[in-house]
Amino acid sequence: MYMAAKHLHMTLVALSVVLLIVRFMFSFAGSDWWNKGMKKALPHIIDTGLLASAIWLCVILSLNPFSVGWLTEKIIPLVVYIVIGTIALKHTSKAVNFVAMILALLTIATIAHLAINKQALLL
Image (spheres, rainbow, N blue to C red):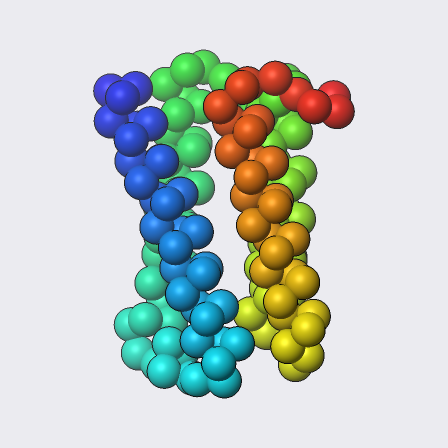
Protein backbone atom coordinates (compact mmCIF):
# COMPACT_ATOMS: atom_id res chain seq x y z
CA MET A 1 0.00 0.00 0.00
CA TYR A 2 2.81 2.40 0.94
CA MET A 3 4.72 1.79 -2.30
CA ALA A 4 1.61 2.42 -4.40
CA ALA A 5 0.93 5.70 -2.59
CA LYS A 6 4.59 6.76 -2.84
CA HIS A 7 4.83 5.97 -6.57
CA LEU A 8 1.52 7.71 -7.28
CA HIS A 9 2.71 10.78 -5.37
CA MET A 10 6.07 10.87 -7.16
CA THR A 11 4.41 10.42 -10.56
CA LEU A 12 2.00 13.26 -9.87
CA VAL A 13 4.89 15.46 -8.71
CA ALA A 14 6.70 14.81 -12.00
CA LEU A 15 3.55 15.50 -14.02
CA SER A 16 2.88 18.70 -12.09
CA VAL A 17 6.41 20.01 -12.66
CA VAL A 18 6.40 19.07 -16.36
CA LEU A 19 3.03 20.77 -16.83
CA LEU A 20 4.29 23.89 -15.05
CA ILE A 21 7.22 24.05 -17.47
CA VAL A 22 5.01 23.44 -20.52
CA ARG A 23 2.47 26.03 -19.37
CA PHE A 24 5.29 28.49 -18.73
CA MET A 25 6.71 27.98 -22.23
CA PHE A 26 3.31 28.61 -23.84
CA SER A 27 2.68 31.62 -21.58
CA PHE A 28 6.15 33.06 -22.18
CA ALA A 29 5.70 32.66 -25.95
CA GLY A 30 2.42 34.57 -25.73
CA SER A 31 0.29 31.62 -26.84
CA ASP A 32 -3.10 31.00 -25.24
CA TRP A 33 -3.38 27.51 -26.77
CA TRP A 34 -2.82 25.89 -23.37
CA ASN A 35 -5.64 27.84 -21.73
CA LYS A 36 -8.43 26.29 -23.78
CA GLY A 37 -10.64 23.33 -22.98
CA MET A 38 -9.54 20.39 -20.85
CA LYS A 39 -5.90 21.48 -20.95
CA LYS A 40 -6.77 24.35 -18.63
CA ALA A 41 -8.28 21.99 -16.01
CA LEU A 42 -5.55 19.31 -16.21
CA PRO A 43 -3.04 20.96 -13.83
CA HIS A 44 -5.78 21.42 -11.22
CA ILE A 45 -6.80 17.77 -11.51
CA ILE A 46 -3.19 16.62 -11.15
CA ASP A 47 -2.51 18.94 -8.21
CA THR A 48 -5.67 17.71 -6.45
CA GLY A 49 -4.46 14.14 -6.93
CA LEU A 50 -1.07 15.21 -5.62
CA LEU A 51 -2.59 16.62 -2.45
CA ALA A 52 -4.77 13.50 -2.01
CA SER A 53 -1.77 11.21 -2.42
CA ALA A 54 0.19 13.27 0.14
CA ILE A 55 -2.66 12.91 2.63
CA TRP A 56 -2.84 9.18 1.83
CA LEU A 57 0.89 8.83 2.59
CA CYS A 58 0.47 10.68 5.90
CA VAL A 59 -2.38 8.36 6.86
CA ILE A 60 -0.45 5.22 5.90
CA LEU A 61 2.62 6.38 7.85
CA SER A 62 0.58 7.83 10.74
CA LEU A 63 2.28 11.19 10.30
CA ASN A 64 0.90 14.48 11.51
CA PRO A 65 2.41 17.01 9.08
CA PHE A 66 2.66 19.63 11.81
CA SER A 67 4.49 17.44 14.32
CA VAL A 68 7.24 16.22 11.99
CA GLY A 69 9.78 18.98 11.34
CA TRP A 70 10.78 18.11 7.78
CA LEU A 71 7.17 17.62 6.74
CA THR A 72 6.08 20.93 8.26
CA GLU A 73 9.01 22.58 6.55
CA LYS A 74 7.96 20.99 3.25
CA ILE A 75 4.56 22.71 3.46
CA ILE A 76 6.11 26.18 3.70
CA PRO A 77 7.98 26.06 0.35
CA LEU A 78 4.93 24.39 -1.19
CA VAL A 79 2.86 27.50 -0.45
CA VAL A 80 5.71 29.69 -1.73
CA TYR A 81 5.88 27.52 -4.88
CA ILE A 82 2.16 28.00 -5.55
CA VAL A 83 2.47 31.78 -5.28
CA ILE A 84 5.66 32.01 -7.35
CA GLY A 85 4.32 29.57 -9.95
CA THR A 86 1.22 31.71 -10.35
CA ILE A 87 3.39 34.78 -10.86
CA ALA A 88 5.52 32.90 -13.42
CA LEU A 89 2.42 32.05 -15.44
CA LYS A 90 0.30 35.18 -15.08
CA HIS A 91 2.46 38.28 -14.62
CA THR A 92 2.52 40.73 -17.52
CA SER A 93 6.30 41.26 -17.50
CA LYS A 94 8.35 38.56 -19.22
CA ALA A 95 11.35 39.38 -17.04
CA VAL A 96 9.29 38.86 -13.89
CA ASN A 97 7.83 35.65 -15.37
CA PHE A 98 11.29 34.30 -16.09
CA VAL A 99 12.71 35.11 -12.64
CA ALA A 100 9.61 33.68 -10.97
CA MET A 101 9.95 30.47 -12.98
CA ILE A 102 13.59 30.08 -11.90
CA LEU A 103 12.55 30.69 -8.28
CA ALA A 104 9.69 28.16 -8.65
CA LEU A 105 12.14 25.52 -9.89
CA LEU A 106 14.51 26.27 -7.01
CA THR A 107 11.59 25.93 -4.61
CA ILE A 108 10.74 22.55 -6.15
CA ALA A 109 14.36 21.51 -5.58
CA THR A 110 14.05 22.54 -1.92
CA ILE A 111 10.87 20.49 -1.53
CA ALA A 112 12.54 17.49 -3.19
CA HIS A 113 15.56 17.84 -0.90
CA LEU A 114 13.32 17.80 2.17
CA ALA A 115 11.36 14.80 0.86
CA ILE A 116 14.46 12.77 0.04
CA ASN A 117 16.52 13.54 3.16
CA LYS A 118 13.63 13.81 5.62
CA GLN A 119 15.60 16.28 7.66
CA ALA A 120 14.44 19.81 8.30
CA LEU A 121 16.71 22.60 7.15
CA LEU A 122 15.28 25.35 9.37
CA LEU A 123 12.90 23.88 11.96
